[in-house]
Image 1 (cartoon, rainbow, N blue to C red):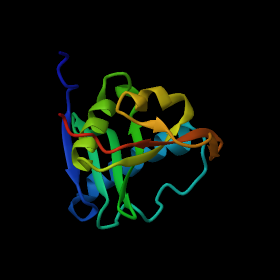
Image 2: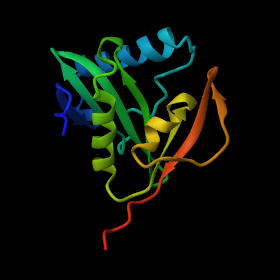
Image 3: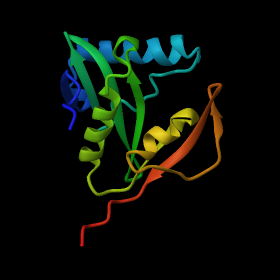
Image 4: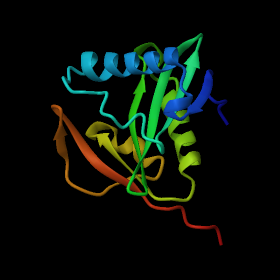
Amino acid sequence: MRPAPAGDLRSASFDELATTTLYAILKLRSEVFVVEQDCVYLDIDGLDPAPDTRHLWIERAGEVAAYVRILDINGTPRIGRVVTAAAARGTGLAGRLIAEALNVIGDRPSVLNAQAHLGDYYAKFGYEQNGPEFDEDGIPHIPMVRAAPQPAR
Protein backbone atom coordinates (compact mmCIF):
# COMPACT_ATOMS: atom_id res chain seq x y z
CA MET A 1 0.00 0.00 0.00
CA ARG A 2 1.38 3.42 -0.99
CA PRO A 3 1.69 6.02 1.76
CA ALA A 4 -0.62 9.04 1.59
CA PRO A 5 0.84 11.97 -0.36
CA ALA A 6 2.72 14.35 1.91
CA GLY A 7 1.10 17.53 3.10
CA ASP A 8 -1.26 18.64 5.83
CA LEU A 9 -4.91 18.01 5.00
CA ARG A 10 -7.18 20.73 6.37
CA SER A 11 -10.94 21.24 6.50
CA ALA A 12 -13.02 24.27 7.42
CA SER A 13 -16.25 26.12 6.93
CA PHE A 14 -15.96 29.55 5.34
CA ASP A 15 -16.19 31.28 8.73
CA GLU A 16 -13.33 29.14 10.04
CA LEU A 17 -10.96 30.02 7.17
CA ALA A 18 -8.13 32.38 8.00
CA THR A 19 -8.01 35.29 5.58
CA THR A 20 -4.52 34.27 4.42
CA THR A 21 -5.76 30.74 3.69
CA LEU A 22 -8.83 32.02 1.85
CA TYR A 23 -6.59 34.30 -0.21
CA ALA A 24 -4.28 31.36 -1.06
CA ILE A 25 -7.24 29.18 -2.07
CA LEU A 26 -8.76 31.86 -4.30
CA LYS A 27 -5.34 32.59 -5.80
CA LEU A 28 -4.81 28.90 -6.67
CA ARG A 29 -8.28 28.60 -8.19
CA SER A 30 -7.68 31.73 -10.29
CA GLU A 31 -4.21 30.59 -11.39
CA VAL A 32 -5.54 27.31 -12.70
CA PHE A 33 -9.15 27.89 -13.77
CA VAL A 34 -8.93 31.46 -15.05
CA VAL A 35 -5.33 31.88 -16.22
CA GLU A 36 -4.02 28.40 -17.08
CA GLN A 37 -7.29 27.09 -18.52
CA ASP A 38 -8.07 30.49 -20.08
CA CYS A 39 -11.65 30.62 -18.75
CA VAL A 40 -12.95 34.08 -18.07
CA TYR A 41 -15.62 33.48 -15.46
CA LEU A 42 -16.50 34.61 -11.96
CA ASP A 43 -14.86 32.02 -9.71
CA ILE A 44 -16.12 33.82 -6.61
CA ASP A 45 -19.69 32.63 -7.17
CA GLY A 46 -21.25 33.33 -3.78
CA LEU A 47 -21.30 29.65 -2.78
CA ASP A 48 -18.07 29.54 -0.76
CA PRO A 49 -19.60 31.24 2.33
CA ALA A 50 -22.78 29.11 2.38
CA PRO A 51 -23.23 27.55 5.83
CA ASP A 52 -23.15 23.96 4.52
CA THR A 53 -20.11 24.45 2.25
CA ARG A 54 -16.99 22.59 3.36
CA HIS A 55 -13.52 23.57 2.16
CA LEU A 56 -10.77 20.94 2.04
CA TRP A 57 -7.18 21.67 1.14
CA ILE A 58 -3.65 20.35 1.48
CA GLU A 59 -0.81 22.57 2.54
CA ARG A 60 2.82 21.91 1.70
CA ALA A 61 5.54 24.15 3.02
CA GLY A 62 2.97 26.78 3.97
CA GLU A 63 1.38 26.85 0.50
CA VAL A 64 -2.03 25.59 -0.62
CA ALA A 65 -1.07 22.78 -3.00
CA ALA A 66 -4.54 21.34 -3.68
CA TYR A 67 -8.15 22.20 -2.88
CA VAL A 68 -11.74 20.97 -3.21
CA ARG A 69 -15.06 22.24 -1.93
CA ILE A 70 -18.21 20.39 -1.04
CA LEU A 71 -21.49 22.20 -1.56
CA ASP A 72 -24.91 21.16 -0.32
CA ILE A 73 -27.38 21.69 -3.14
CA ASN A 74 -30.90 20.90 -1.94
CA GLY A 75 -29.58 18.17 0.36
CA THR A 76 -27.26 16.61 -2.22
CA PRO A 77 -23.50 17.02 -1.76
CA ARG A 78 -21.70 18.42 -4.82
CA ILE A 79 -17.93 18.18 -5.15
CA GLY A 80 -16.38 21.01 -7.09
CA ARG A 81 -13.44 23.33 -7.66
CA VAL A 82 -11.04 20.38 -7.57
CA VAL A 83 -7.66 21.95 -8.22
CA THR A 84 -3.97 21.13 -7.78
CA ALA A 85 -1.08 23.55 -8.14
CA ALA A 86 1.02 22.85 -11.24
CA ALA A 87 4.09 21.95 -9.16
CA ALA A 88 2.13 19.37 -7.14
CA ARG A 89 0.33 17.55 -9.96
CA GLY A 90 0.81 13.81 -10.27
CA THR A 91 1.54 13.40 -6.57
CA GLY A 92 -1.87 12.07 -5.51
CA LEU A 93 -3.06 15.16 -3.68
CA ALA A 94 -6.34 15.46 -5.58
CA GLY A 95 -7.11 11.80 -4.92
CA ARG A 96 -6.41 12.29 -1.25
CA LEU A 97 -8.81 15.24 -1.18
CA ILE A 98 -11.54 13.36 -3.09
CA ALA A 99 -11.21 10.44 -0.65
CA GLU A 100 -11.55 12.84 2.28
CA ALA A 101 -14.51 14.56 0.62
CA LEU A 102 -16.21 11.17 0.36
CA ASN A 103 -15.52 10.59 4.07
CA VAL A 104 -17.20 13.92 4.83
CA ILE A 105 -20.14 13.06 2.55
CA GLY A 106 -20.53 9.66 4.18
CA ASP A 107 -23.29 7.36 2.95
CA ARG A 108 -25.16 10.02 0.97
CA PRO A 109 -25.20 10.05 -2.84
CA SER A 110 -23.20 12.90 -4.38
CA VAL A 111 -22.66 14.61 -7.71
CA LEU A 112 -20.00 16.51 -9.61
CA ASN A 113 -19.37 17.99 -13.04
CA ALA A 114 -16.08 16.58 -14.31
CA GLN A 115 -13.96 17.87 -17.12
CA ALA A 116 -14.72 15.21 -19.73
CA HIS A 117 -11.15 13.92 -19.96
CA LEU A 118 -11.26 13.16 -16.20
CA GLY A 119 -14.33 10.90 -16.29
CA ASP A 120 -12.27 7.72 -15.81
CA TYR A 121 -10.41 9.34 -12.92
CA TYR A 122 -13.64 10.06 -11.02
CA ALA A 123 -14.98 6.60 -11.91
CA LYS A 124 -12.23 5.19 -9.64
CA PHE A 125 -14.11 6.84 -6.76
CA GLY A 126 -17.45 5.33 -7.77
CA TYR A 127 -18.81 8.14 -9.96
CA GLU A 128 -20.72 7.37 -13.16
CA GLN A 129 -21.66 9.66 -15.98
CA ASN A 130 -25.37 10.43 -15.76
CA GLY A 131 -25.99 12.83 -18.62
CA PRO A 132 -24.64 14.12 -21.90
CA GLU A 133 -21.40 16.03 -22.28
CA PHE A 134 -21.80 19.81 -22.10
CA ASP A 135 -19.64 22.89 -22.55
CA GLU A 136 -18.74 24.94 -19.49
CA ASP A 137 -16.58 27.97 -20.18
CA GLY A 138 -15.14 26.40 -23.33
CA ILE A 139 -14.21 23.09 -21.65
CA PRO A 140 -16.15 19.84 -22.24
CA HIS A 141 -17.69 18.54 -18.99
CA ILE A 142 -19.82 15.55 -18.00
CA PRO A 143 -22.27 15.29 -15.11
CA MET A 144 -21.48 12.43 -12.75
CA VAL A 145 -23.23 10.83 -9.80
CA ARG A 146 -22.07 8.51 -7.05
CA ALA A 147 -24.83 6.42 -5.53
CA ALA A 148 -25.01 5.92 -1.79
CA PRO A 149 -22.67 3.07 -0.84
CA GLN A 150 -24.51 -0.19 -0.20
CA PRO A 151 -24.05 -1.75 3.24
CA ALA A 152 -21.90 -4.88 3.35
CA ARG A 153 -23.78 -8.16 3.71
